Length: 119
Image (cartoon, rainbow, N blue to C red; front, side, top):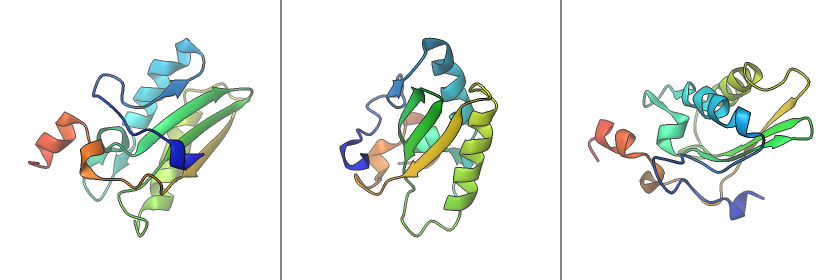
């Protein structure tokens, strides 16, 4: 349920991850490669990823966009799927759930992203 998602709390743990430990780092790295083309920052640094659950043949990402009117949402979701497909077992289904609660705000960005944006 997206409304219960907890935004990233620190730069050390960018988002909650539930699943096999050997997939934690590859999953974080895969999602970090996905860049929001409007701001040239990764979706992880922007704080768009609310959480990932990997198990039972499914890799599920809960995430948001900076705005519900984001014109590149479909592109970003497609890139998330492509990047995860490279790191999760081939038999796993990938599911991306877009959430609008809690709504994104700049406090969810990493220190690196805030510095990049001069915030």
